[in-house]
Length: 178
Image 1 (cartoon, helix red, strand yellow):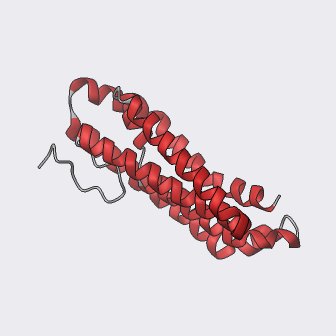
Image 2: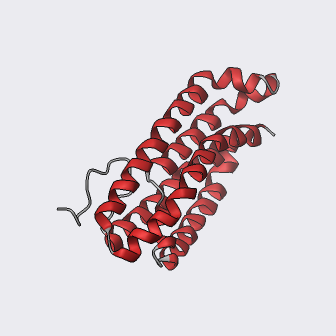
């Protein structure tokens, strides 16, 4: 349906995360094993900036050209423009918080990843139950955006607290380097 098309379009942004996370995983494990958090912060900061730059370019295409992209699937799909914007912002939030799940998982902190995912799932389901009956696919997209922010914010907090690494696009340096 309409939501599915908007969702699939924004998965192009998610693909960038997977492409960059592949080489980041063994690097994270290696630096963690050595206790070299300054180098890990450097690599994490460079990767999030690279991902965010590429993702922002795609986001501009989706937001500015969204109506035309959706029209390629048929006139009825243009009603998915607002959900497309929300889902694009969802992916930008995903990218902007950095590779938080990977950092936790590759450093032995998988329980924190699971906790964050569980809490975000509860938030997502709750918001879907509340928003979809009134706002339809826009409510579903808003629920996705909100739960993604909750999830990634929580995982970023865990990464910073446990590893001293700022995984976000806002990173300058970690407290390890302070």
